[in-house]
Length: 457
Image (cartoon, rainbow, N blue to C red):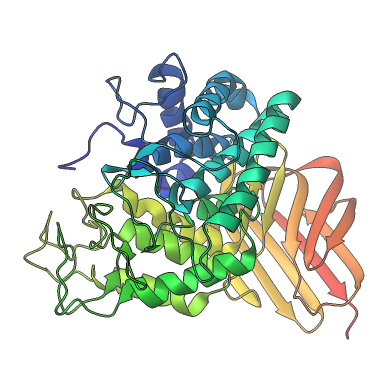
């Protein structure tokens, strides 16, 4: 509280915890965005209760979150209600910022850094790609093949064009527009892969070549993470004590800092730190991810910290930013999704886990469309066991997804039980990834058990 009221779309862009723990809250927020406050032409309001203009990142997030809320629903009734508005919002975004439909944004784009950024970036461009792919999936679910094909075509062009034009050999940069705005040019922006973070959580795949993504993440950690801030001026606001560490928004390791530059480049926000760490987990960069998480949480260890904006700091339940108890910090919910490799499509009856964290002996909490519980995976020798305990509600299933070790040989046998009953299924394997398609829709109120045995190599 204390700043940025009225459900700022560009701040809630990062928040995941609320909608994953309580899907009804997420659906209610999307109905407000899309059925109550949407402009007649499809533009979103970056704050509710008044006809504000759209912030591009928040507008993209509204589309991405609409798909998230569909995935966490038990059926497609929610999507049917909002789809006409989602399509209108997607079409407005294309017409306003990508009129030539090359998948690269243009013009001045207002965003969560409280300024407009000009021209082509992956900071906003990756969110555009993720939003297009989410809109494509929703169009397919609604049977609108023409819209799906259009969004797919623009997405594919943008993925190719952004990767070619904005890659400097180490990370993604900006090509400013004319006239320029509050830009970052050759800077290494911590948010340069924001849309890829969203895409992994929605099971939308890679937006850019994976080797570029991992290189950019390494650059973000190398240039933007500081173990302490002694001798560094955090401006315009200070959220970290000098003797503590954190991740800066943007740095210019190769020079070229423009004037004016993107506001808040010299600040530290936990909402960004958790987002970057989450993407690092998806990409297998555990050492860097844990360093970011431990540093961020270490600043909120219960010890009172004076002299900070929006402070005092240190309360484990009150991560400071523009206000107290700031919503952006709920990007931390994405850490669990990444660690367990969570896959969910409630209306399609798809549930899956491909744990990045301790796949040999993994235990984690999950929330599905109509129930929640505990997921356990163990590996021993050439065997892998899966246990999904339903602690509340039910699981309606048509397909389960898991992942074997990369070195696993051909499958020798599979076994699947729902509430103790054998479930007939077909197995499709693609590399380490398994899909178990049930011959008939199944339902579990207590537990799902699976066993995989493969030939040794």
